[in-house]
Image (cartoon, rainbow, N blue to C red; front, side, top):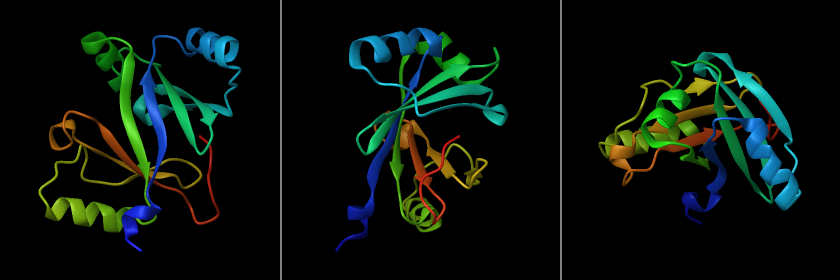
Length: 144
């Protein structure tokens, strides 16, 4: 079995001006409630996770005028921000893509509280799509 068969879409990040406004649609039209809502201080964003089967939508709202999400919305407006792929071994995936000349947003794997690890691949290397690779702790999924 090829290792890429262990990959899956973890979430799709959507930049929004207001999580509360966006949730009106997802709650009213689709009946989807967030499974978690949290602040990522380092990135100056607030996020809400909406479970959809094995994947999730991640609504992203800026908590500061100088955040990546604020700049994204100023430049492109609300909409698709990134696609996240869950991988079983983040270090191996990063080593493999770096050998092929892929450009990363940062040189270091980042970690959120709870052990969620991630790194972003620059859109120039992925046909214009910001791609996030994520890995969870061995004990399963985490929130926030």
